[in-house]
Image (cartoon, rainbow, N blue to C red; front, side, top):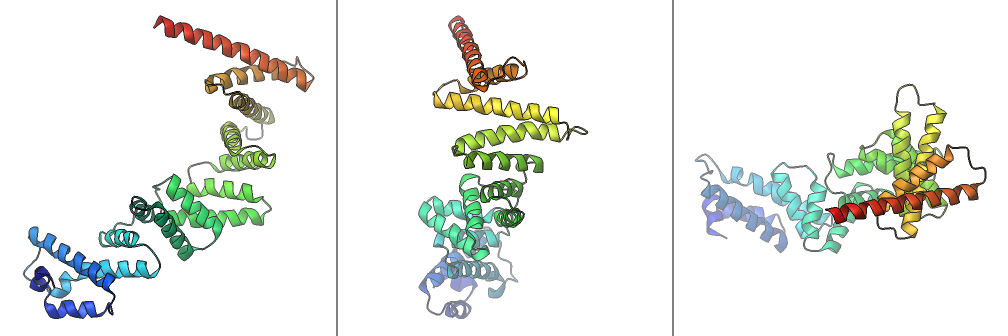
Length: 312
């Protein structure tokens, strides 16, 4: 027994506590180390009052070790358990899962991933729930709401979308966006629609993400304006704008154009001007003309940019 423990807790009280660990050396070592450091900090800060007893001084250490043991018995790693126990005694419940994960991942990312799986199995166990939570923690990090609440909302919405006949891709995409609560529902619906259609047609995930983001952004602006939600002309222009963008993006990507954003702007401008000119009746003729004008615009842009660079 460490002297500081004997000084403030006493041999009898300490041994009575240790007996409850029934010979588990890990729990005993963790408890003893925490208790000694806890008392040392209190002593250095002159925070031990005359009326403090072994019982009052053991309250925080008891809360710490109870949480640690509970986590270990559920299958979490030692680092996860230590982090969770520290957060508990500080009454800090903000982003506990993410903070526990980060502390473990600093030492062992595989162990951290296993801990996330343990957490998911305790909460839900469904693969979709687990995939959402793991992806959010690893790739997005901190959130305003507890991640387990976000994951629960996601899973509920996902199941509802399947029940009303949506595809798994649509349901998963829509539920993810809605659960994060960053986007308007209209945006989420249109994003999921185009993302689903693009992947179904065999497009890449990057293509699907680009098209869905542009399509949803264009249409939500129109649909949210008071009085013109059903204005088909405005909606069709928004769809055309999205098509122009993705066609330009696709060409730039396939041809490794470095100034991709500039080319997309040139292509979109050419596409929309040609589309609303009533000049073309054949799709092949239309596509050729749009690309020709877009490349000319882009070359002019590059020439002007080069001249400005030389002048500077």
